[in-house]
Length: 509
Image 1 (spheres, rainbow, N blue to C red):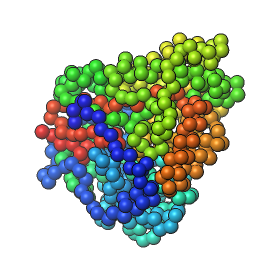
Image 2 (cartoon, helix red, strand yellow):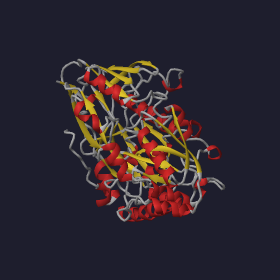
Image 3 (cartoon, rainbow, N blue to C red):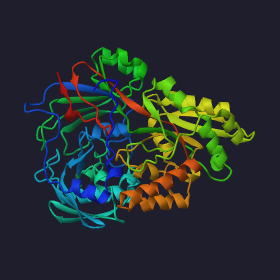
Image 4 (cartoon, rainbow, N blue to C red):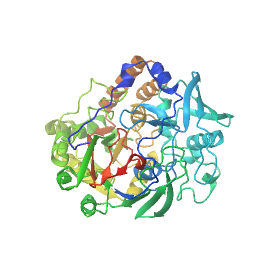
């Protein structure tokens, strides 16, 4: 894929009745082989660079893209997506069908084993579901799966999943849920030495440096073409580029636009990442308790300027919501808050709010630079900004602090991995882990949409919810940058629409 290519996904969920779409997708019992790979034995090696170390290799505990870069290749999910079309495909589940409005029957793929020899069966699926929805785990991934209330074994290869109401996007949620071995999950090594059913096996984690994987020659599907994979931690993009040019790397994400011409090869794809700042602390007496102050922040930031100056135009401005225009739930009636410094100052009415703005550096493309630019723009409007750039793990902890400890504002990037508005919008319902803003009308609209199977009715609910969020502004909407990848000349690979990095889809020239 050339650096100039921009792909879009057909907006299926908005065009078809959701119930009909789900039955069409989930009724399939075909067993396609994974894309990529080849008939010969795996050979060769690739090195992929990430900006920060995983916070854990427990695939269910946190919401960490660096963890996923490793575990997406070790663990597998019940449902897959086609990387080029986003259509649902069988994974560890052969089929998923509605038994009644709140029960889904999952038929599992037979003869699949974890790399430690344990069977992937109904017991493993029930345990995986039960663990991730257990409040005791405090999983940061809970919002992906929080409609699921339980799982019951029917037989060794059949599981019934129950939801707290009709769930129109459960198949999408099942593209997220990684299946784990119940016995191994209770061992001390589980969070540092992962064991899955996927095309790659864990070899070693040198914390702060690298994770190494090797091809699983007993993999149930098409064997990967590449034998060995190293995922290196290289925080600085310039260092990654130099390593790429020196043939020490084969792939890096988050390549800066101005560096594209220096890379041996590049690929681009529209990103699932939505950059924003949570105005996280809206409690009484805090600067962002006042809606006018939150709106002033919206007008103070020049989003078009951010795209042009930092990203060379590679991306789009958020349309007054953290939902992309080809995802279910997008409200076409909303437009971005215009850059209007005078209006921002008028809304502040002479106030100079002192705010602490927390962020991190190296995980996303130009994250630090974006954060610094936003802080500067807020300062021009009259905000007194204290900028705190934290190490990635500390930033993750800060993001999910309890309400009575939340900072004024925190940088984040929402990746809507389900390609649906549900999860982005649940981030600001009452009880959200990211923001203490609580609006009952908004929460009721989002929760009702979650159990509405009629596409038109669901869209209407989302239009109301996004309009209310836009007006109240608990989130400072920024941009949706493109994914830009630097590649070695020997790597054969095309980026996926869902942003996943799957080594089984790669080969070498």
